[in-house]
Amino acid sequence: MDPLKSITSIASSGLLAQSTRLKVVTENVANAETRGTTPGADPYRRKTVSFAEAVDRATGTSHVEVAEIGRARGEFDTVLDPSHPAADENGFVKVPDVNTLLEMANMREASRSYEANMTMFETGRKMRARMLDLLK
Image (cartoon, rainbow, N blue to C red; front, side, top):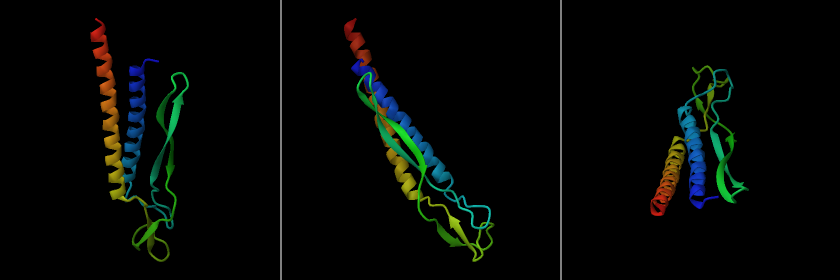
């Protein structure tokens, strides 16, 4: 495979992975206050993204791919809100396990990684165009 073409392929896989990560972060932030609607019901559970290396056997290049979009594990915090429909017999309501500060940090990291992959994609494209210009 053409090394310059592999640059765009690798960068494209990074763009796809980071855009998926941004989508999951967006869902988490949007549902940071989503609680259950019936007594004792679980609220929104934070989503997580796992990446894995994928090797293209034809070219031997490594790509990144989304291995899994899962759910965070652990206990929910509770708040006292007896008027909420999901309140238990003691008036406590389970709240989502979404930490918006952590999600904003994840968003910033994913955004920067996306930008880095986009820069590599553009660099590969420019190198390819320059090579074609030199061959004319």
